[in-house]
Image (cartoon, rainbow, N blue to C red):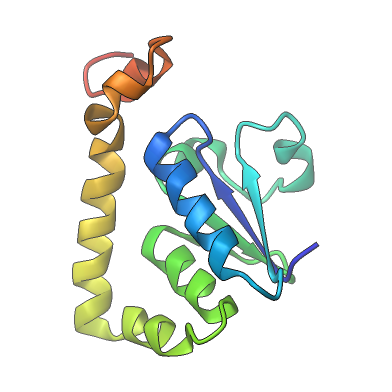
Length: 131
């Protein structure tokens, strides 16, 4: 297993594409990417809030510490070859706030943008007003 486990929404095309990019960049196999919808996830990661994980990507380090959203991306960057400068930038106070806002906006709207990729309609449950 990698030193960082990233839980992503496997029902989201944007999330799957991001996970694929991380896989391609992770030459040292330091990151394990796991679909948070895998039935074994709750038992394996009891510290992860499943509802929050559906809204924001989660990263769990080797000590079990959970990072969410832009903080999870900072941890991913830190684990990738040559990614430490990007991780440092994401943690800077002004940049962290802006990046966090952008991440939250993208995460909130990701199903709206990918409706056509979700032919079975399962993405619709994530759209505002569709619960």
